Image: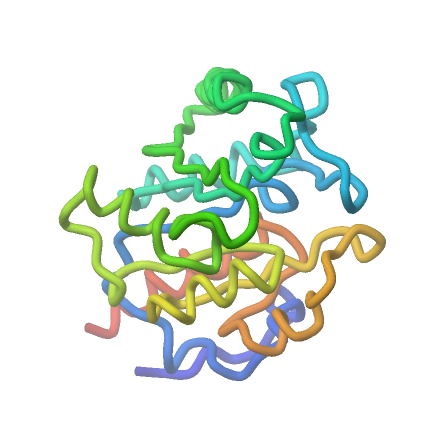
Length: 214
């Protein structure tokens, strides 16, 4: 497999494990939510309702690209605010329903949403633990680690992926709102980009290249 040359459109790729280690048989993309799909609120603030959910630029189009490429797109998100009593599981489901409606206007959709409503050390589904991946496998038994990747903006997202042997993609996002551990997350991730649209453009380019070489 060829190594992707670093050109102007790949300047945001920080790590060296790009073309050589990218998995040609990609089938499933796991997306974190806050900070990847929507603008992350300041630390210790939560998206308690749809009015606080600000979709990031280019996200609907990026998801539509993944859909058009025939990839399964799943959202996996920690929602500790439920355990803290700040909002309910129904509130989260309403946000996701509204998000689907917005995405549909761009011809995009999410194939499944999985969220952890628990506080720390209370479950097996709070990332970086594997429970949300396992929930997705129940709905889609064909999901395999070898054909999946995770895109996230926090250390827990990258550790989630590494624990499950997924390809990991770090989203840098707003430097002023990065979580503690972002520097380590970027160093651990297989790939790093400033935004989801940049990541998707690169990944789909790699998929096309790998298909042509196979």
